[in-house]
Image (cartoon, rainbow, N blue to C red; front, side, top):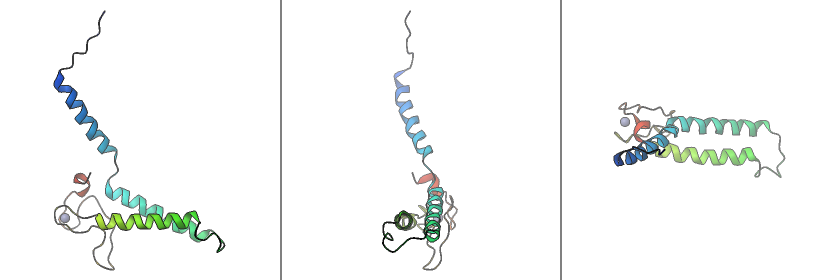
Length: 117
Ligand SMILES: [Zn+2]
């Protein structure tokens, strides 16, 4: 008995395309990612505040390093978080005005998460 694969040659390329889009769906939305980073930063700073450390290990404190790295990551993410339609930054509205990013642009309502992959 012979088992044959009756797949037409065109379906092979289709399978590849579906796999690619599936991988993209697994990726977290930028706005969700940003909030996770922000939450971790707050936790790191919180943990750092509660931890009583001596001056000797101040710079090797994991909470200190963690909050530093997360802080830099957040700044980079915040600077690059702009709407593709109206080019407005979604995090930094002004010098003292910041906001949490959402999946839609606050200015024009453009779905940012959908197009930034
Ligand atoms: Zn916009």
